[in-house]
Length: 269
Image (cartoon, rainbow, N blue to C red):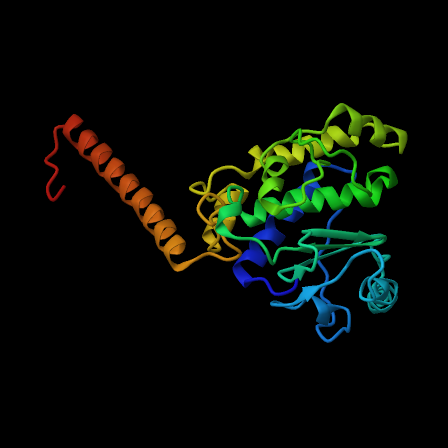
C-alpha cells in the first residue's frame, strides 16, 4: 500500500487476512517494498500516472516484478504469482484499476466521501478479490461485460459506479461459466461467500472483525474517506462510550433487583 493512512492500512490488512480463512482459491499476503523503487515513485500520493496500454510507465512493470521478486527470494517461501499495488495516486485516464500480468495497480486517488457506502476498506476488499480472480482465471483478466448487474466482474469506469458490485455479493452466470472453463467451477461460490461480508459482524462487538478494526480506530460503518476524520473518530468514541454506559446501567439495575429479591438494602445504588 502506497500513501495510505496507517489506520486505514492496518484495518485493510486485518480484514484481508480474514479472506484467507473464508476460501481456499486465493491466499493474500502483505509484503514490504522498496520505497525508493523507480516504479513505486510513480505511485506516490499526489501523482497522476499514465498506465495505459502503450505508456512508458506501464512498460516498466516487468522490471519492477524482476526487482521485487529478487528482493523476496531471500525467503524460503516462493514469491507470489501476482502482485497488487494499492495507491492513492490517480490514473491519467481516471481508471481505478490497471492490470498487466502479473501486476495489478489499484488507484484510489479519486476516492471521496461521496463514493461511500461502502467504506474504502470494504471497497478494497472487493477489488482485491477481483484482482485475485484475474490472477487465477485468464479469461477474467479483461473487461468481461458492460452491463451493471452487481457482478464482481462488472465493468465500472468510475469509482462511484463500482459501489454496486462492492455492496453486492454476486457472480453472474456468464462469469461463472468462464471461471469453470478455466478449471475453477467452485470459485464463484467462494467469491460470493467473501463478498457477502456478513462475516464482518458489528463494530460494537469486539469479537468480530469489524469490532477489531473499530478498536484500532477504523469504523467500517462510519468512515467514508481515505482515512478517518476527527468527526468520525469522535462519533465512534461517543458510540463506544454510550454502549459502555448502557451496560453499566443494566448491570446496576440487575444488582439492585437481586438485592431487593434477597430483602437487602441496596445502599448507594
